[in-house]
Image 1 (cartoon, rainbow, N blue to C red):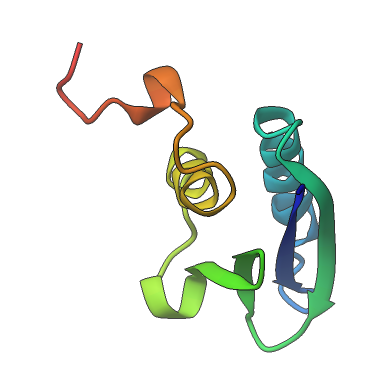
Image 2: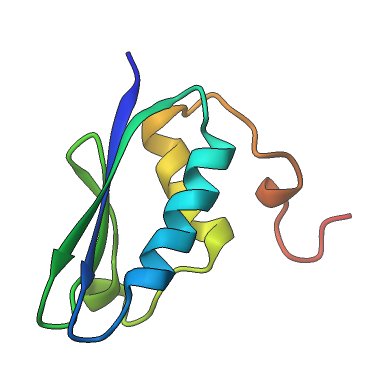
Amino acid sequence: MPSRVEIHYCTQCRWLLRAAWMAQELLTTFEDEIGELVLKPGTGGVFEVRADDQMVWSRKAAGRFPDITELKQAVRDVVAPERSLGHADRKTGDR
């Protein structure tokens, strides 16, 4: 069953472009696994990503935004845990 991903972003902080770019990256990477991706406007500095109602990233909890590789790995762990992300799964220093 295709997964649902939600990106809740702050409109006051003007984070729509960041949310939209991350949405594009996720939809491109997980074109067969994601059936729905929602951009949900909010306020108060919110930037959270959920996959199938499971929190995979919170800017408040982490103290920062994810880099795109981190976000793809976190989403993958929920929507397609058996899937390899190829070079994105390599740890720093691996060749």
